[in-house]
Image 1 (cartoon, helix red, strand yellow):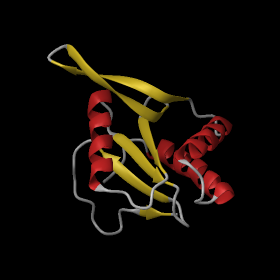
Image 2: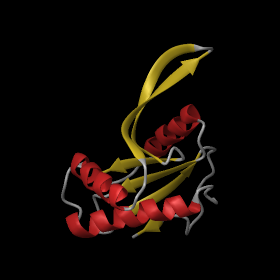
Image 3: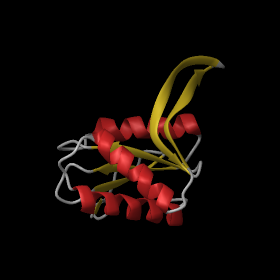
Image 4: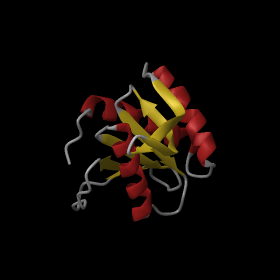
Length: 135
């Protein structure tokens, strides 16, 4: 999958790597969120944290999503600090992309010895071997 915002994606991943190198895998998701906000700010990236995203059905508000980060208005970043990512995590992120009318998202899992980065596109495409990033 080719991401639409490659440079932005690289900058976000670099910030996440710095956080993971310093904190390691032992903390709660909220702590990684705080640290990533510091790194994104230092990188000069504009972002919104815990952004509420309304979801409509036939022009009726039916609920809302809460995005961990919306970076530069172009990319969604979903943070996790869990033992293993599951398909449902990616389905949820794709629903965020659809509701926001965006194409690119990253799921970052900090709860492993190496940072796990998963790229998510709006349309479901089974990932092929080698598409996952483990940093």
